[in-house]
Length: 163
Image (cartoon, rainbow, N blue to C red; front, side, top):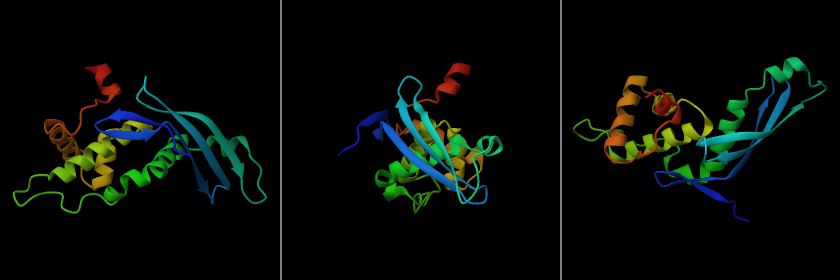
């Protein structure tokens, strides 16, 4: 059965629904999430969250307060997108050309990381910085170059409100 896909712009399609889990063995629980993409807000919205204690532990209020919902959601989206992203999974091999300019492959990867950060509610420029292991300033310049080359066309709605 094929999952319904949603076009989020820049030629990127994501599953309408994602499900995932994260296990925290040291904390003694596993968190499962189901999220739906909401085009009105441009990101996934968590619809269900299930916490299950592992071993002989009980689910407690303290345990529930430790659940990192954003992390569980990000993991679910990343797992669902693995098949679409596998060519870029490790990032671009050659981040710049002989002149030191970012390659089209690098900027395509920047645009993809930026868009996926938006759908999970993460700060997109910081996500680019983490993915490429560069400073936030360098990531910002790469995002601007991706915009200039037309590889990134969707704006962070949180930034648009401030403008």
